[in-house]
Length: 141
Length: 141
DNA sequence: AATTTTTGTTGCTAAAGTCAACCTTTTTAT
DNA sequence: ATAAAAAGGTTGACTTTAGCAACAAAAATT
Image (cartoon, rainbow over the protein chains, first blue to last red):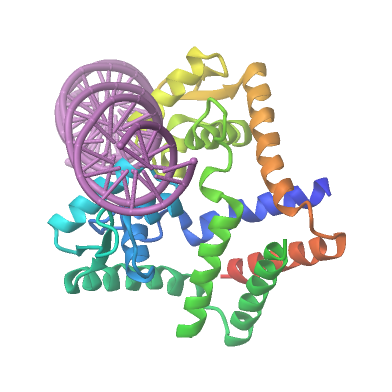
């Protein structure tokens, strides 16, 4: 057991370095990693609200509020007041926002691509199935 | 290929969430994640200097300088001036520093332990070999 | 109807990190 | 040998990132 823990931690250290997980999006972009995450979430979560973002990412709601404000000023999102609940505002990504997001995504893709470009198809498949296995084992509670 | 990239990114997102990689050490401790990393590096890298830390972690040298200063004030490290090069100071961890580091490490262990405590020995072995496989594939250049 | 909770905003603050200027020592180029 | 450049490190000023607490308006609960 002790030995396993050590190996997992070793893998974590390796994997952090390898994937550059700590700055997956940011390089050269005008979005911070957090902002990129939030923009991505607004795009992919239906009827996204400020409080969803705050709960999901465990960020202070004041902080989220300011990021949203900045996004709106930069016209990458717009706020749509809810009809049923007048406290709520649904966040929607604009066309410009989508373009920014696409750019962020393709940069992130490029990072990963560079990491795996010299790996054969066979080994790439093995890589993916190892990842799937890890995910399966760790999620089965 | 495209599909593989997407799967790897999905695994990355999953793994970040699962392992809490972004705050592996910090919880409840008086060390920030960065400080913990730096203390760990001083401990494990022979003849560690400020500039090594700055280059290795890609942190500003001013920032590193201040962290080192704080560490010295708190007596968790000491500076040993180099004989050959009078600009350099080798950083050495003190006994108190070692104790702090042990505590940080055991907290990190606890995190991982909690994550895997309900996993059977068999699956734990499979987990580790999947990790080893990933590491092997990704490092073979 | 009164209270509590939810959703979001704002002012203030602390922590984390960068930039530029600087000093001293060592290395490199002339 | 000497001048210039580079390396190691420090400091002051600053920005970015983030959290806390108080607040307002609307909705839900009692």
